[in-house]
Amino acid sequence: MKLGLALPKARLTADDFRFARQAGATHLHVNLTEPQPVTERMRASRERYPKTVHSDPNEADWTYEAFRDLRKAVNDQDLILDAITGFEPAHWHDILLDGPCRGEQMEKLKTILRDMGRAGIPIMGYNFTIAGVWGREASTVSRAGARSPGFHDPPQPPIPNGMVWNRVYDPDLYDEENPKGYAGQITHEEQWRRLEAFLLEILPVAEEAGVKLAMHPDDPPLPTLRGTPRLIYGPDHYQRMLDIHPSPSNAMNTCVGTMAEMAEGDVYEMMDRYSRTGRIAFVHFRNVRGKVPHYDEVFIDEGDVDMIRILRNLKQNNFDGVITPDHSPSFAIGTSWYTGKAFTLGWLNAAIGIVEAE
Ligand SMILES: [Mn+2]
Image 1 (spheres, rainbow, N blue to C red):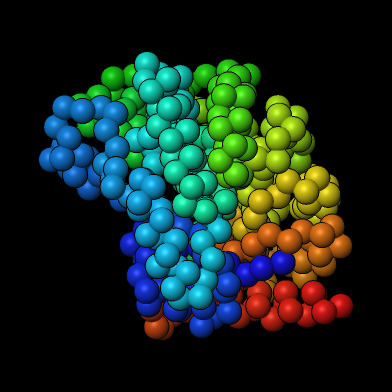
Image 2: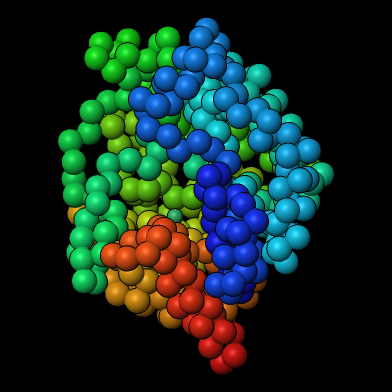
């Protein structure tokens, strides 16, 4: 088992890489999407792409050369670039929504996977979701009032057309005040059909490129969110996804926190069952208190889940991939993102060392 750190696009600097290495990580995951609030996103999109619906707002980050240079910068700090953790919504909204540019966007994604393979980046994370990660608000129930996300059954307005996740991909279509219809109000079976079509078409390309596609469960793991269907929110759902295609590139990014939040099933049984398949590409580690529709994310060493038991089970099932801290509560002092990550990395580094030595 290897220790990794996931970095957002804004933190891809040499000092950030050194921070990861100093805290004990050997591997990095990077998120190249732009996590901007909707209003900023709309403003930026309007300025840069006044008419274009399907343009990629950071095309330069998604080329072979960019991947190659990123990998080199990571290697230069004695780390391994293990994964990119998600496609930009502008690249594939019509794959999720079965829209008119689906074919063109499938070709774009295939090019990205080929370029990743060529650059030596072995894993692409993804989450086949229309509503994305949504509805969590800051909670302070972690130890000594540390701030951390919680989910408490909020009202769920439907998603105006022109948006997937929380990202506006078409500012001309998107109208928050007077929506021109709503996105993704479809059945679960239709969303499974879209996932199946996506995987059957893209997996041969991924396999040839030597890249694994690693699917994250739906966070929060509710059957529907904002009226859109979710696919991976219960104990058997990953099996249905794995059964679509036996390729080793058809893989999972299991998330201990999200799986513990599921209303049904048992996180230990799920992790045991899926790690036995050998198709977990990497694991997100975080602890949680509660289950949908009411839960709070908490420090790694508090909460409902016995994280050591999870690690022992992963070792027993010969999991040899990367484990990264997921979201971490924020400390009251210091640069909170870094202190939260450093705490979780230190805990995980010690725990992995002990479990591996048993
Ligand atoms: Mn996660």
